[in-house]
Image (tube, rainbow, N blue to C red; front, side, top):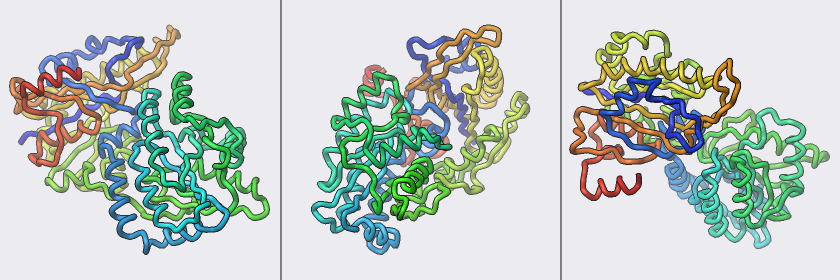
Length: 482
């Protein structure tokens, strides 16, 4: 029975101009040899770290699914009888107060759901509702798309709603400093900061300064979006996130601003990971297309080989943002057994598992030389895996995010260089059941890697794959986009 193996070298990417070259083909001969006989394509990634990358890998682009779930299961179905919604509606209609929505603008479609919720409330003509944008984008390359999303949102907002603050999601640290508290007080409670009504010009200015969107210190788009006492605040989150840095800043500053009777009504759309008891409209969103669900539907089992410190995190995403023990997913902690060729062969070919994921990272190195040493060790394990897969199993070698890091060359040479693999990652796939004369591997995103590996062992029409039969049109299209 054919099995499918995914070997992740996270941090590996397509070398960008100006990056220090570490000659991976020389350091990793097994990897280099595999490339010669494999399908090859590239994928676009916006991640620079493993948390966001894991989520895209195991769940794909969940945003549309989440918004559809909110629309169909909350707004269109249960909202009128939802107890948290009733409390929200009551606080939102208090005279002479404002309503504040905090949302991450990763897709312009979110404006429809926010409009729908506002439309369910009978608001007076002078009622003010502000939409505050928390930028979570990790790279400056995303500013152009971000500008397009924000312009769409601004144009399609309900007449009651105005964009207020725009602030980086990571601009406030988890352990908030007094300086950060003072700044957020001036921004959120006084509008005493930069004002840019033409947000696209400000965002282009930030791009030129090479400031990542998630680190933007924050600015206002008008003079009246500040938080007042008795206002209502909603975190319009589509997944169980942690906004405690913002919640702490809001609550602590409100105590100083309104010493007599500080009172704010806080809600979240989906239950938060929070130390605060924030009422939510729904507890969680069900993800039908996560790894555990696909395995269950097709009676398959997966084994994931990972660092001990990452197992909980990998398990969380593989189970659809749920920390459960799923009988279809097992874990092995990385150890020296993986350097044993016989051990690897038995692990892959003589166990009950159908899918194997080997999870390695190249961004833990302290120097370039150290990185080369680690990649050489990874290549030894990869060689054992290749031997266990040739003419038996499907094998994908890829990465989930592109590393960008400044490192000294060696312990004895402190000259620093930039390793830059942002934006694009390579995907190499070998599967003896797909002859290269008849099939091709098309470009995609990190969402498509896992589904492609699953498609190699599961004959289900609803699983996407980057592997497609060759056609004249397809070949011309692929040549063009390369």
